[in-house]
Amino acid sequence: MIIAPITDPVAQEHLANISPDGITRFTMLQGTIKGAILSGTRLVSQARANHQLGIIESLALGQALVSAGLLSTTIKEGTRLGIQIHCTGPLKGLSVDTTWNGNVRGYVFNDSVLIDKPLESFDLQPFIGSGTLSVIRKDERGEPYTGHIQLVHGRIAEDLTEYFLRSEQTKTALAVSVRFDKEGRVSGAGGLFFQAMPGAQDLDMEDTEDRIREMPSLGTWFASGKSRHGLLDEWFRAFEIDHVHDSPVQFYCTCSRERFLQFLRSMGKAELEHMLETGPWPMEIHCHHCGSRYHFPREEIELLIGRNA
Image (cartoon, rainbow, N blue to C red):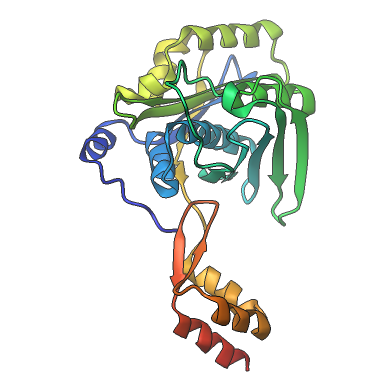
């Protein structure tokens, strides 16, 4: 993966002065509810820089990446989880995935959404519209299990909540937030996830959801430099937080120039010769997962043909 630089000095200073990104896992109410809180301002900022996105695209992808990071706490070591949305709105959809240890990547299907008037709010529903949401779980062998629902709200966190209730029959509460400063920079991003365990009472989940509605925006919380542990202590102390564990989260992709070169090596001689004839040069290969772009000169492809001869 090629990490695009964040060159804006104001953004650099802000990211240097806020709390680190990460995921805090915990249980509460004597283990009947499990939860996770994620701070991901750097995660979303890096995804935006790599894909060179505008505000709406950054908002949608940022919310999806934060959601995937939170859901990484629901899968086992060596496995992956993906979220895909196919929709009728201008975004057309998005795809994100995460490893069990918090390496998150993804992209929006339309990275050039046109806005013909000032935004009245940061509600994504007009940009998502109707469509489907899929959650894909892959085991250690890469075998996928996919669940689908029709979009109900056109908002990522709310539709994921619907997914868990309808497809997995699990009561879940999910809140995600991405905030921007007056100049359109990502200033704060984060999310909060709760899921009922065996023995959980309906009233306990209702109280948890009420608390989420009362608390401040997570994007605003993390933009101000506050921490994950500080939020749990201030807003959920009465819920008997226990078994707290911190882990990293980052925008990360397994792509590399060598991996794409191996792919080119596996192609037939006729295909490579056609590429040599048609160009352009240098050849550019774009990783849609993370926005990295790799370049290969003509001489390198000629060498591959010589090896295949």
